[in-house]
Image (cartoon, rainbow, N blue to C red; front, side, top):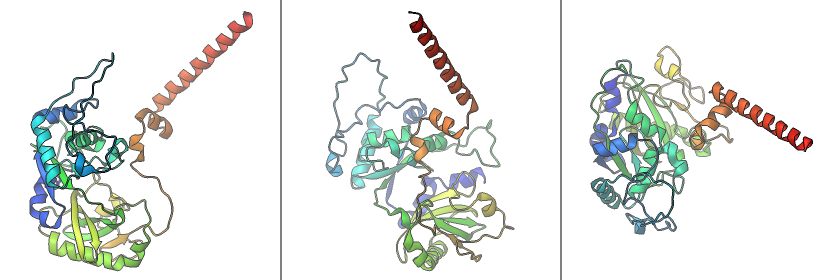
Length: 344
């Protein structure tokens, strides 16, 4: 994977060429001061971006509605930044897209931050919804700080290529995750397909698998192949109905992209024989979840404090040692207190 291949997967680069087969979107260049705000620690929402949250059932009536709150408290408050022009651009775009939007930056959406959203989704109806998701997302931080970390031709001490970061607002669609599929292209050949929501079981897939593969192949050869500049890449589609597909996104062909039901070792090694769920080997192979069952959401851990997650998984031994020392100290204090009580 090379820097140029990652840049080609940037939304502002590919969308103009493929917007006819994708979801309507509006791009807003990120001002320098807003980029600086995204890099700062903490979550302080900009002035003028808040809306009331008591009643959001009618989202269309609440677009851009501001909330004037008097925070009468002795607690020290962080200074809220202000981006009036950027706020106005976001409100205008939301109105143009029907009052509800899906936000992302050049490569990633803040899907790891849905735990903090009002309705646990990426649906935004005002600037504050957008800001809260962007500020709470590790995926967005990766976009801003390490977009080329896995590239073979990039050194960390080298100057990063100039990236024109944009906020992308996509018209909100109530998409059924069972109709989303990830497709892997190697040397301009579609080699593998799998369901995008890989932890869920969808019974219809096994009955329609031949039509699903046929539709994706036709979409690839007529709409995507040789029109996208990379030879190796990943693209996501939404199959609304038989023969009706939407292009969702392009991603780099490498470890920075989730292989879902495939490993990158088997995807990148041409000597490895890929097999689908039904053991087929003819490209593109198709993998889907064939047994009904319950699996945890892979994004659920992002809503858990890092210290607790490290302790639970054992990834940071020093924190476990600190916890044991603290527990021992508490026991010693309790024991000392009991002895004092016995003497009195």
